[in-house]
Image (cartoon, rainbow, N blue to C red):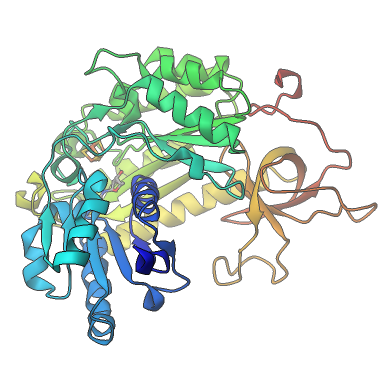
Length: 476
Ligand code: 5AD
Ligand code: SF4
């Protein structure tokens, strides 16, 4: 054990916010064994790779990273290499045969067994594969007390798995069936986070709208109402929503709940009914447009972002034009767009009429260019307005991230309730610098708009504790 007191670990995370949250749970487990965070991967005694299988490219990244660890293991044979997450779940045993330097493969439900497996490997130098799916992934309460004050915004997983079986998607196969955490556990975690200085939580699930339905527990809207009551917490976000399950009760939360931020990520995937049907999405283009109208009439300032897949098998030029016209019509605040990627366990990998790589590439570019103009227009309209920002830290924006931005980077960064990134400096140019610190809500006047962010400066007078809706009088 003494030796462990100086042992260190490195976790490499690929993929979605769910993986970021899972990596934090992994860190909790191994820190409780005495491991400390290493400064660099080549200084670590334990390297864990938390993997993503959503697209082929993510999976390739996993194997190339693991390949690069082989020389490290040759130099340092005591090094333990563990692979977790979705690729581990999907590939299991095959990772051990392909990568002889890997010691442990643990699936999406095996995080709670991590410490025990590492202990066994340290003492017996045995290789282990644990990919059983027994629902254990979120049944344990995470160590919320480890919340660092420097991180005022945190993820909280409220459910695992997915029952939707979209035909392109690997998630139901690697994360298992939908299962929700008990609301009391979730609230306890959030209260602990808020108590330790966290100001914003993002509730996570593959489809948070169906939270609790299967278990007959409270609905997602009821859960939000309870989270809204947590003292000290100032902002609530959630992701991801499936359009087919977005209830009126949930839409009402956007007008009723003072802490719920005016942003929804609502993946549509395609604007073509024919494609949506073949994707098994269970809603039409018209349904999606209706939801957006209802959201905007409930919360006029709501920002809507979405996910798109281009080049789904059989997608014609006319289908793609339907996607473009939906984008023009909805005027989204932002999007993530992906070229369709075959996932062997998903049914669409066996659909005929695959779209060629150059066509996928061209459609992706057209879609991104269309959205870029819309985003720029929306950002430009914010110049001169006052926005409430949760200060998240020092700005790391560089010219490489956004070549259109100026070279001098203001020191602070944060987000508006609409999830727009704002960089700002603490002096207003006319008077003394304001006391800005991480975790504070501040009002910023937007002065410049770029395609990925906004730049501004604090309003002359600090307003105390504005609410997430930006309505100062709502502060409690
Ligand atoms: N190919 C391309 N994109 C995919 N996504 C999910 N599966 C695939 C796939 N096989 C995208 C969807 C989803 C996002 C997380 O990843 O747009 O919303
Ligand atoms: Fe995948 Fe569809 Fe489930 Fe989202 S809802 S995780 S796209 S199967």
